[in-house]
Length: 259
Ligand SMILES: NC(=O)c1ccc[n+]([C@@H]2O[C@H](COP(=O)([O-])OP(=O)(O)OC[C@H]3O[C@@H](n4cnc5c(N)ncnc54)[C@H](OP(=O)(O)O)[C@@H]3O)[C@@H](O)[C@H]2O)c1
Image (cartoon, rainbow, N blue to C red):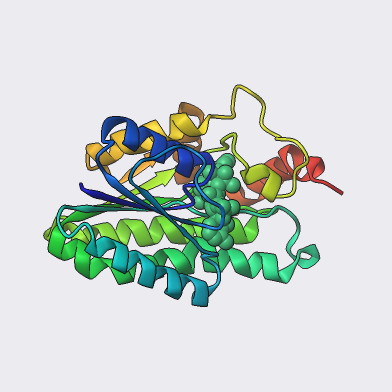
């Protein structure tokens, strides 16, 4: 790889991925798309400020990105679709713009970036990492739209992987469980609802994701408790799994939300 393009490298899992790659490959050229800039010190980084949920801003950012890519004309491109957010609550009581914004960021921006960059990636070679979530494994009442957007990321990534195999583009879908990042403050919590044992760090997730990408894996669930959850979700019928998911999320999340 000679180029890494990441969305949401300004904090959390994205920032940890940038740190990890730059540690091993400092010569790589980095492009980050997010609203705020990247605070870690990276020599070869271009930050493209952009609200990815706004299609006009995304289109303008793509123009800047494509011009930037001309300065690195050779070598494979790694695209990491990481930016995303989630909102907890019961759908009828939630802000519509916030819910629709999740579709725009978590899904639309990811697909648009991929479609725009694929021709160059097919020509030059490359890989894609999409950050989904364990919320993709079972419908998540109290997190209904977010869970559905992450199921989209999982389905899209696995399907795209098959289509792109012949062109040598590897697509990895990463499903982290609860991770100690700014995700929870944006999701409406005053303080992180994660118990220290379950809450994994973004560095842990980044390391697992990059190891899986290096091994050309299709799907990685980070952390053994999350892996266990994945297998439970695969065997329990949905009619039973969804009410259980609702009960658990109401108990562990909804009651700690800001009033
Ligand atoms: N933390 C968890 O428990 C968890 C679990 C499973 C999956 N995930 C997924 O992991 C990914 C990274 O989240 P995180 O946990 O690292 O949370 P985070 O610390 O809040 O990071 C989110 C990143 O997305 C960017 N972003 C948010 N809204 C944006 C917008 N409108 N336009 C452009 N960039 C935007 C943010 O940058 P700016 O604010 O600067 O724009 C930030 O860099 C997300 O897709 C999330 O769904 C997180």
